[in-house]
Length: 424
Image (cartoon, rainbow, N blue to C red; front, side, top):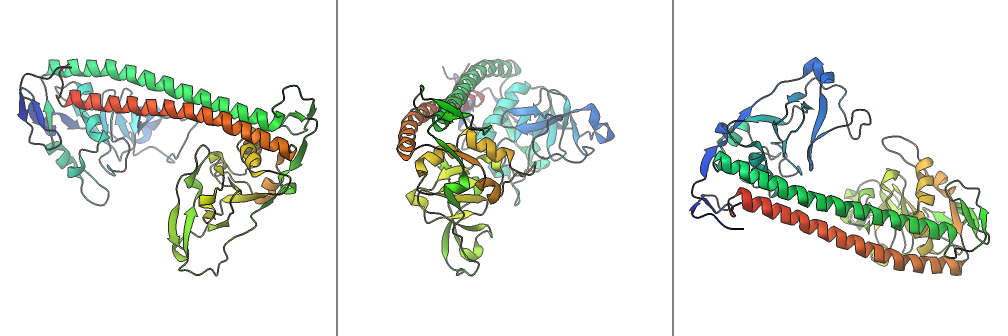
């Protein structure tokens, strides 16, 4: 892509030079503030939200997340309006959106109309600023807030209208193709993950021999199992929560703490926090040894399940975990895979109590059913799944890397075009 014929200094360090014919225009000539509170008419509007995917409609029939008791303080959004989040700017993943819908949104956001500009060009310009939090010099206060006066005095470099339209159309076309490629890769990842789960489920409930005689396990979530396998309750093949830190632990003791949110179904332990015991959360109590399996018993939909590897055996785990120690009938490597199978996680889900904060107690957990093949077969299954799932994980990693590169290319493309580094 070629550059423009001539450039001038923008006077903005991060922006550098801009095309000579682009004009510097204060936002007060571009944006017009508008706030119409919906009041008692909220039932006439779709509920909107500002997300990483832009302005989206919320599903009022099947709500996810928190909703207020009433929407009287929400404000009207028209198609083509800009929605800005001008507070907590540094922490908010996406602070600008261009609405394609008529609806309502929280009164905490700021709604603008635009004058004499191409809306999509302005959107891409501010999307680019938001990606790198370029409005940081405008923040004030503890909540990183941009006042409306400060926002209106901020200058935007604007090409002629016909050029704005050309840039917007170019970026619409290019980003749509990139988004399609990202969407395809994400669907492929979802299929790979589904295949991985099916592979695990089949291996830990049916074994590796497709011709083995089967029997009914009498457990809905397990189905048929090989005739020579046992099916037992977890409490007969393990111990649960054997060790905890006592209340009289020295307050100055340094601990490494693992919370529920620090463990993911796919990656295991992702974060360890350091505390002195006296400053640690009150739930920092569970002790675990190498080879133990930790299973989330609160917010069970997270499926925070993993084996404790040697590097984490000196960590203290949240009481929101059950620490399961296998006995001589059960290999740790097999049980970790079984615990991540649908045969186990569906049982956890069924016996969890509570809607918004589902939890299962240790007694109910201990009564869940598990397949128990002969030890030698458990090891073969674990070895097989380690090899096969590693291949799938590698394929997922490649797809994930491809997605990151596509997103990076999209970001660079938008930046280069809306700042005039290249001509379209």
